[in-house]
Length: 353
Image (cartoon, rainbow, N blue to C red; front, side, top):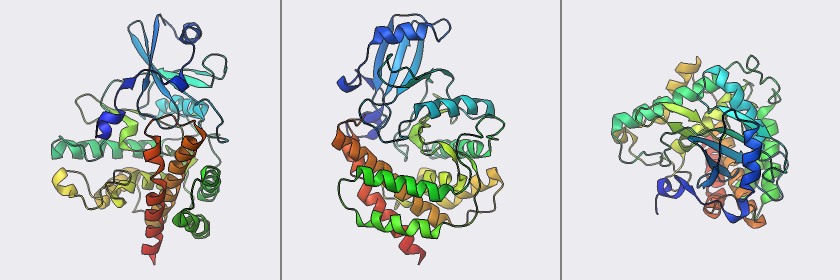
């Protein structure tokens, strides 16, 4: 099993550390979901580094359950209640998201907070170069992704009840402080590039403070595509979403264009034209056209910030490996990316001169 597609696709028996009383969950859901019928069968999805995610089969219906992991957790992490809130709200804004059913904050049911949503059937692509596809099909997949992130950033967050979903203003200042703190809490080794970014980023935040819903982890493998069409049926994994700067969110999505294939599945050095995948410039232009922008000033800062943030996320996963609470058996290899991603982030700063 060498490819990410093979590693992360599909389900497996529930891991020992993530088991719970299935009968207790079945009783709870019968009172929450109309026409819910047992017996309930539970499997665990292979993907999902952070919040354990399960496929529920009940009668002729399938659902997905996402829960906080058991064990000691970082403050504010694994906020499944926020995921539930944003998914439920964005369904009103023409953003493709799964239908939600219930949020449970009673830890007696499965041991931690969780929510249940529809299981959206379709394709999940784990390899950004989309092996085996025709160039035109790859281009259409990337255009669909571009369209959906533009819809997320264009949603009227106040009109759909998300005006209290974050603190508008000083977004980068707050995020840099948050991820610096979380990085330090999970630190397992000294990474010089990360230390340099922690100092440099707060002192170089560009002016301007646009606000929108931001996904926080918008990438190819966090969405379900139609089984045969280049159309996004559902954007998943909203754990890091908040109100924030859309350009920072878009730059995170743009990182593969600046990273090597062995670091975050990047495109650096890849012949994108032959694959049918847009260049960074083409992709930025399409987003700007859809959101009414005239380019993205300070893109290099946003890139450095996002590489810092992604390194912090990877280090958080390595910290959970250390603490024994990592959700995925592939957590170690993800955690080891903290250093090369941080070094790529500092390289963005050095290239700015």
